[in-house]
Amino acid sequence: MSTHHALSLPPLDVLVQGSGPALLLAHGAGGGIQGNFGLVLDDLARDHTLVGPHYPGAGGSPVATEPLDLDDLADQLVAAALAAGQESFAVLGESLGSAVAVRVAARHPERVRALVLTAGFPVADPVLALAVRLVASLADAGRWDDVARLACLSCMSPAYLAAIAPDELDAAVAGTLAGFPPGLLDHFDLVSRVDVRADLGGISAPTLVMAPTGDRLVLPESSHHLAAGIPGAQLIELPGAAHVLNEADRATWLGHVRAFLAALPAERV
Image (cartoon, rainbow, N blue to C red):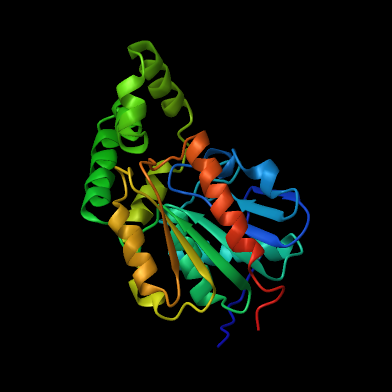
């Protein structure tokens, strides 16, 4: 079944790189294309056309003037792909981007060849919901350095934090703070309202769900819920991996994703 929604070119900052079958990238809250996918962009671009829109308030995209809407955001990403000359694509979603990817597939099934959902959630689980409230309250109090500390605590692996020197941790917090996009609070507000549970059973695209088992921001069980809800979805765990994948875990992720993409038919029918 196909659905058709009117699409207009959005004022989003979009990375376009490479050639070959298209991959539409959906980044996470408070992140961006480089932040989420930077370790694998050059590799994937060797044989794929990457289309990486930045959400409002990330990258060079203007800050939203009203609360973000999941349907609108999904349509904006599709419009960005069409503007880049890509009529169909696989969607790679990370964290919040997984919910965006699911909504893209629900609203535009005729365009979506496959989904890869990493550290995702159909609705905010209790840990994520608490983190969203903490981010909002700390930001409201002007304690952005503590927001950065919470981000490091939530997104880095326990093994990494156990081995890091105090000055290196301070530098990591400072770097995290400096990297916050202007739209961070808008993104996390959307996280608090996302609910794609009703979409899952209707997803027809081949789907790979990647669950970092060491994730302390989004419970690994949330990835399990995504996989259980999408017909035929494949679930792969990344043992000990944190919410933000380090170089080694991202390399493992890349191997699984490449194998999944290589097995797709040339065209969906």
